[in-house]
Length: 339
Image (cartoon, rainbow, N blue to C red; front, side, top):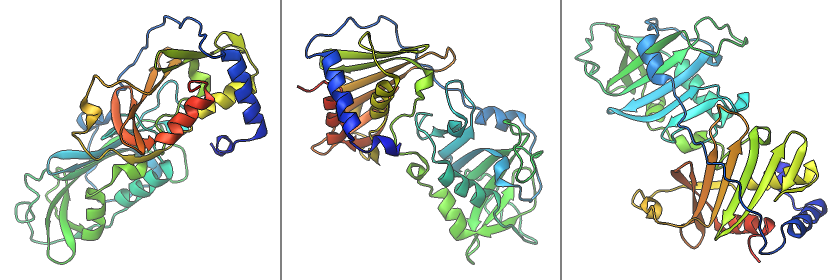
């Protein structure tokens, strides 16, 4: 991504080429193909239902983990799983289904730190404490893990998990620990309170790449760029690269495509009652990525006015983040949408 951060002489030349190709106010008819937006499938529920439970208090290599779900007081606060999908690179297979509805890319470095913390936690056995006394019976706070028990440390395992475990969290013991137990077990253990509080009070925003969307150019057939009645199209077919129907150099095309992905997420939307609930809003800029992979969902990104500094961004109808308003307007200038 760093090569798209710098405005070089070649980038300025590309902008001049684009303006000369697109002109000012003269736009070809937009292609009629409808968007095919699909809700991604997530396997955490089926893994919980169908896979056997591991009842042993043992640690495995963190690379074996395929899914994690954290529930606090009956509410799922974080859910992530390894979901290979058409149209994605392998590094982008991790999928945060809660709270981001599979619309973000994951910071895998941060995620593996979390998985390692959960999967390698120490268990201190107790004697003479029942599930009821420990506050575990009927607990609605838990950590669910799906993993591949056949995987050895340092080796690449299968994509699917083979077993699961659910850690039920009970009361504090007054000595810096929580009581806990594996679901299906009668034995109670202690786990470090500070460690467990860090897990239960997770900040999902920490585990995402700060980009609204990440779409490989190799999976895209057409990109539509729309703003205030104007539109442009970028097309990639076989070895042909086109801007509004006119063939251009591959390097020019990819440089411009990179700019579409180069707006950074700065913060989450904090106000649940913000104007993002207003369906009548008009987007300042809309990007539509139409895929050349049948099984891959098309992607629609919309930028909306939010306040004096920020715009909000919606991906396939899900709106969670804010971006710098100036970065959106700079992109529009580069695309010839501001005159």
